Image (cartoon, rainbow, N blue to C red; front, side, top):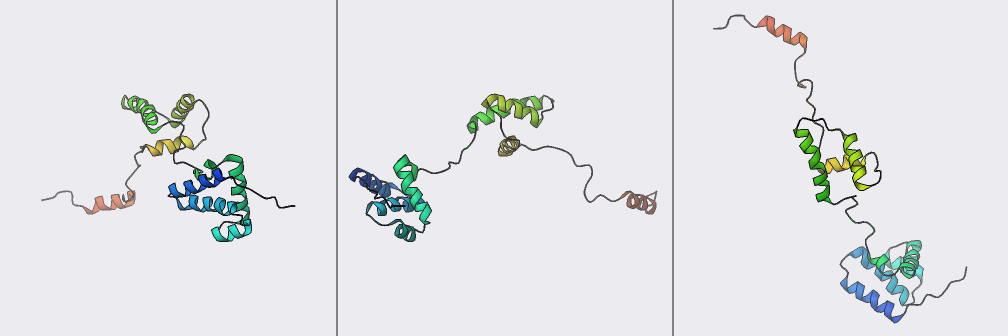
Length: 168
C-alpha cells in the first residue's frame, strides 16, 4: 500500500490552532495535537508515540477530520442526557400517576411504561422505565411480613409460660 501525502490548507491549520487555544479538555487537546503534528508533516508512527494514542487511532482521527471536519474531533462523543424527554416533562408525566395513586388507584409499572411509550412515540427497552422511575426516587412500597428479629413461635410460647399471670 502506497503512502499518500496528506496536505492541510492554511485555513485548516489556523482553525486547528484556534481550537487548541480555546480548548480546555486535555483529551480533546491530544486529538487536536495529532492533527497539528500531521499538518507539520510528521509521520503517523511518530505522532502515535508522542501523543500516546495507538497508530490506528491516530490514523483514524486524521481520516475522521478530513471526512467530517473539526467538530468531529472537538465534540464530545456522548453527552449526559440521553433521555427521550426533558426532566421537567418526565416530572409532569409522572405527576399524573401520583395523583391517581393518591386517589387510591393501583398504578403498575406496565401501565406507566405503555403510557410512556405512547408519549415518546416509540418502544423503550424493558429496563428503561425502571431507570426513569429510579431517577425520580420511585420505589415499590411493600410492608415486610414480620420484623427480622421477631422471636419464633416456640420462643413466644415459652416466654408466656414463664411470665406470671398476676403482676404487682
